[in-house]
Length: 432
View (tube, rainbow, N blue to C red):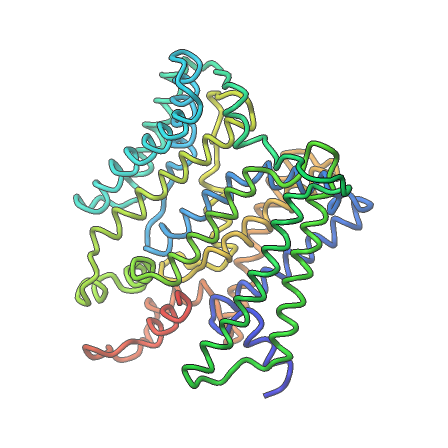
């Protein structure tokens, strides 16, 4: 095997889903470099990167939950309305009823859980398609936001704003950087090195062929280099700014949900249901429980995203959450998920979300109007689909091709009981 093939296979994993993510990483880098040139270096300045994380963290949080919903074979159109409804409930509780902001956050999460349980019940136990349930929820909770808020803006207290507009505090000696951000960066580098070393140890213990050392070296160099660069940028902002608190919340969620979807039985069950619900049920997977969980989890994350947005905006208003569901869905699909379910990863969705966020940010820095921004983003999505179709025609991995395969006449013979189909095997490997 050539070194190029080794690198392609092992740098970010050898599954079809990871191959799509590999291409999206190059797309993300290309967008960054393009706007770095067009904006005379503004894209990668500390202030702009901090602003991007602060402005788009709530969309990336939504993408985490939406990935699990889509992998399970559903869609959620209500997340923007749920976020807006939660935001106004929490703002009213603090502004009119003097609820402490810490308790208000718990209240918001409970509101999200209750909404998720409501929608999950209809999807999982009544059997109404998630598209219909969440379309109704979009109307219901948008109306609830305007009814409770009387179509007015409601301010929130200073302490609550920390989760959306706060930064890591300045502590320790004067180094010219935010010391806590530097420490987090060092911890991240150490974690990446340990994870690579541990992965090689596990492969050796299992008797599997280890990744070539030079590939591990390249992978570590790239990842550590990116972490160091980002750490210095976020730590080197103007005094009083650093890594946003919302970015830390996002990072914790990415780590937690990545572990859950990749390393737990519950996460594997989600992929199994999305790959073949009937086969998963026959294998002992609690289908109703999985569907209920993904819908409920989505609403909890939507509630959290809504509170972060309200905290950053310093007030809740009737226009909060408009079209958020479209941004979250776009991030998931651009990141490599399949409409038919069963394929996709948390990290891929984050990459897809960053592609859209940095594209939007770069166009704004160039002074492009909001109308043209929407047109360009739509064309980018269409181009991504066209490239996917081209890959399918060339015999390469294609999300759209994998979706349409079951509807072709030349279907393979049915798989006998107890045997996994190639598609199921590929999805299982992508999930793992």
